[in-house]
Image (cartoon, rainbow, N blue to C red; front, top):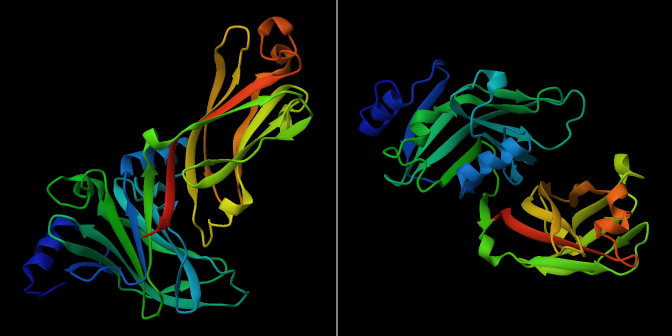
Length: 321
């Protein structure tokens, strides 16, 4: 801040310049009031976003001032807002706003310095108006990526960072979340022998990492692959989906396979997807062409039976901490 005698604030303004005078940066000790997001493996998150062709990731929902919000992070910058080369941070209102509704707020973002044990606060000094046609506001150039990734700064340590968001003046309960990876060695596979092929069939439930799943098989395909391929999907059961409340999501990367029963090897496809209340199934609609399934010499179907398998390689879970 101009005229401040705080050496940390002075250093901060030098390290993190911004072309807009309405954005200020200070350093404080207090953690975020409304939302905290811990990303335990930023590089893996970036890889996941690249695979799913997304450039942002959202926190769990949090309440402030009687409304529901999410905190959005663009790890490589929001290029649509000229945020290339910067960490871009936004808040979005979740509630559906009626026509004519206007909500004026001020907000700030926080980045934890794991070396100095304090927070860099990035604040937009202008009031922003949320309305039906404008439900997201943020700072596209919150922090340049060279500074964010610098090992001497402390914002990213061992691929882990802690970010926060506050909707100012409005009251709310803190919602803390961790984007955590389940270690590969704890993951196990599930093999399913389907002894009598039907048009569609579901496996029995199985548990991986404390959550119930099942496989769904369409022997003659589903969707655009109907009549062309065997389709196989991994589904998170209702009892586990119900845990994914208030915007919580689970990311899984897994292999779906069908066994060649003559040669003993598997035909495999790797699938990745975000499981949530609105999307509980991910899989492959074209795991195996029917021309190969129906050909006895190929060995995938023997006595009208097939053997399929799922092997979950990694799970990332956005959860409360």
